[in-house]
Length: 166
Length: 365
Length: 100
Ligand SMILES: Cc1cc2nc3c(=O)[nH]c(=O)nc-3n(C[C@H](O)[C@H](O)[C@H](O)COP(=O)(O)OP(=O)(O)OC[C@H]3O[C@@H](n4cnc5c(N)ncnc54)[C@H](O)[C@@H]3O)c2cc1C
Ligand code: SF4
Ligand code: SF4
Image (cartoon, rainbow over all chains, first blue to last red):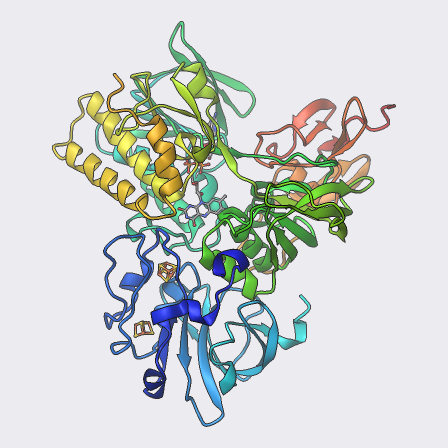
């Protein structure tokens, strides 16, 4: 249970979990925000209107996965760092994950990095494909990381492999 | 020295600054007292993007919100700011606030209305050795690392998994300090899930039903003995274990700094949901003393978003009471009240709603 | 120890000043409180309690508690977490050597 452990189990994602059919069609945002809290900046972050307007500030966000193209612009707008983009079929063997990062040292494109799951366990090695900066939030980065396909719904954080003891 | 003002605001955090902002352009003579050398209060120590509603700058980093508000207030001709000045007491016989500037100069400050926005102070925890150097409140850790760029330690254990414990743990990681674990006495994580998820995936474990029993060390903290708690919050015998650490950070809650309100003889009530003793108030943040308004954490420990809304309401209410009516003042107050109600509506707001039910009265005076 | 690099904050430092702590010279910045400058130099124990002679460090660091009182330029009970450090200040541990 998320409330006991501080991390969620995949089935707690409920409707926020894209279908296999949606994954087939390309990258999509997953909003791992499942508790009603007074927070709403994400609702204006998507210029495609894929994150639906809130009725109340305490709503959990709802996403229209048909409108979402996985651009990742919403990621750095979320103070909870709770939005990820998963491109499951990035290529035959791997998936691509876009995740937020506000920790130094920022990796460089091409770096190989340790992959961490929601519990902070190291589950593999991945490769940084791209580093995205946004205007509205210049201090944080959105990292595009290539991961083994079976880890697409596991990996949620990276750490530079040469200083993983820090 | 004697100073006269129309509205005195005590405390230059988000609540006090928003109160001042409501009074811009009213022609009223407004004075802010702030004991720190800068305005912004708690906001200045927050490196994370804030929660809440975008109208209250959610998504902007705390210290940047502080800078925005400070600029707005400082640019205004009818607001005077006195920094490094503590409001140290109220003298009812003559009806002034005694203020001390830079530990040297004394002022008697006469006012028509006063808005108390002094914030909250940190609670401590009772255990053997809790006075050793190396044991700090979460606020001290934030002050050291986020204001002054000094590492509070190398190897930290955090007590408390409320939002503050979770966020400060995250800030410690950003500063390059190792956080060994977060201990939580309750059976569940106290703060928002998204904050917990952040620190978990970065490798900080959270142990629920666990607390610190003893702190050990000669001249400073060297280790702590931790222990499991049962469902009645009692130590489980035999589960004690010793963990080394050089810093223990206590994030076990805040209580309103309401000393001045006692001196004003406002009717006070102990409300655990709001953090301690708070003054009774009506919907426009006026206490049972007709000239005294409250806003922010001193009126009940909550969030910057609500502090800003309460400050806004209190500021407009004071303007109205002094007949500096903007045409839309009632409308503006109502809008802020609506926002505040909306924020308190969800399950997280339940505790606050229960607390407010005990101190909110329909009319004061 | 000072934080060298931070992902979010650009620290603005004041002028470097030198001061002494229990006779030993140290450096700090003139816009930081005494206790912070001591911390940056690894000094955590600021005073000893009157009765039981227990070591004391900062607790709140915003001037609410009295855990950081020290002798500054000969004046006892100075709240070092808010009082800023100045060039040439003489800082002393308070209550050192007091018998139990
Ligand atoms: C780690 C942490 C994370 C947080 N994260 C969030 C978040 O994400 N979103 C959110 O909405 N809120 C957050 N908050 C809460 C928020 O910071 C506070 O609720 C808010 O700052 C309260 O505002 P305030 O103006 O009432 O008090 P403060 O900000 O505490 O300001 C009070 C001011 O009054 C001054 N003062 C006190 N007494 C006197 C006196 N006698 N004379 C003169 N001046 C005096 C103080 O120096 C201070 O500057 C967080 C708090 C912490 C500690
Ligand atoms: S990933 Fe892009 S399209 Fe999808 S919700 Fe976020 S901002 Fe909108
Ligand atoms: S901004 Fe992030 S944390 Fe806030 S409601 Fe949206 S997804 Fe949740």
